[in-house]
Length: 475
Image (cartoon, rainbow, N blue to C red; front, side, top):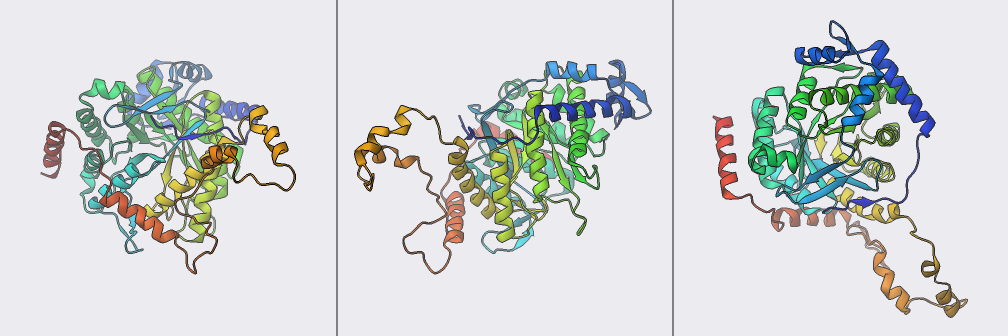
């Protein structure tokens, strides 16, 4: 069982009163203004349950939202690839779990320091590294290897990830048809769809298109996930001033309405189908016209979104540990640190994009290692000072030592000093060397993960079935 970061220290972005106002604004948008919905069977299902349909414009009532909130699961258990319990997720609770990518458009090669196209062989490196690092609980298998045909990138990447990674896999698909393949591939590893449903070690990821548009690709992915009872994230990614209003409350309300539309659809398809609340309300940088992954406003709003999700009692999927910088420089380290700390103190549950740089264009193994160490240190911060009582105040010891004394040789110190966090990367040497040793330690960690860490192998019959799938895909 993974215990993630045990939070006892929280901050609050939104009061309960303001969360209610945002929720009510979202309900207004859903019932009065409506949303664009693609897909004939989604439109027919909404209409069957009382939604108002005008072409592809769908208006749903507060009653439909409330009914969906009654049936949606309020907690989620995810398992390791071998079926053993791993992540227990309770909305607004004390646990937060982090994940990185197994593939991306580019990789910041840790051995050359250069950004280059991501290749299929890099998937194994990322999976071994994520398996080795204690604070990385899942990877995103997104199908972007540049040396694989686009038509089969999704399936090949998932095959490689499941072969080389033993924790939880979050997958997304390039198209609707490949999602069916992914469910079948994951079912092979699980020993059947029923086993996969009972002990899910994968969960799906899909998005609407802000503002308030749910294309057929999105509704079909929600449909396939719901009917197969595969946990699914529904995550609007908006940019204030571009695809959402240049107002934080308005952006939150719009994104909340977009998620609620997906929530209602999944519960109409299959009441009780697991869905995870996702929200990425960033900014459109008016200097560069990019959607920022490092903006302070972005991560403030991620924390706010986690509070709205907690209010509904639904697990939250957020973003942290990423940067707009192309390399692991001063900008990247600053943004990574701020984001991980913000998220650790928020009410978020599952956090993706650890180690992602260059506006989500690349993944940097070195940044993943750095964030793993940051997360470990922040566990101490998030636990807080602990209970204040007779034992922890230790007044007899203070009185015994007296003014001007020392605690170094006391049994009290020997018993407790290991509770202090000691970074694997950072140094507090009496005499610091003339150059930084951090990069060398990061590279040593990557080399150890690649050359020494062994990911448990799948059973041969499963590997044989996956090989047949690969042969079929590659022709």
